[in-house]
Image 1 (cartoon, rainbow, N blue to C red):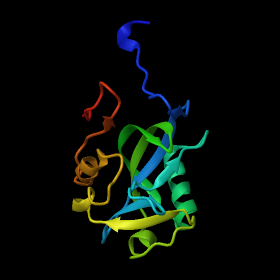
Image 2 (tube, helix red, strand yellow):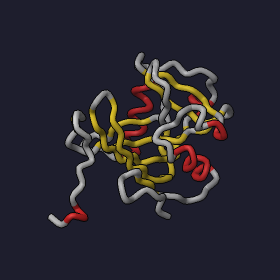
Image 3 (cartoon, helix red, strand yellow):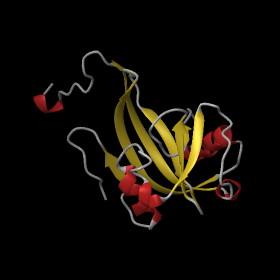
Length: 168
């Protein structure tokens, strides 16, 4: 194999999931800001959503995940962009591709506090201009979400080595 194609992204002592996770995520805006999700007790947030199951469309997966997590209905709308992200969590390397969509749900947006259907989750409203304070991950979303909500296009971002810029 030519040297330019040789790349070992997994550091010693790290276990790797040997598959790429396909995630559907949503940007839901309400009067209090954007809806973010966090695992209970953790110090970071992420856009709500979850894994796309085999044979399921990304928009159907997003709507299903929101219902499973909040027991409320939401509608996936326009496609906003893709984030390719790698990270290590609890000693396991992950590689995710997140498809991000607009998300609407009037029953969700009207509520100041949301009670998750899954006890491991918390949902918070965060003003758009304070996404860094919420430790939104992956980090490029801190810039991309405000761009997307203004109707601008930045459809792809990857944090993979050698491919670190948003593609327009």
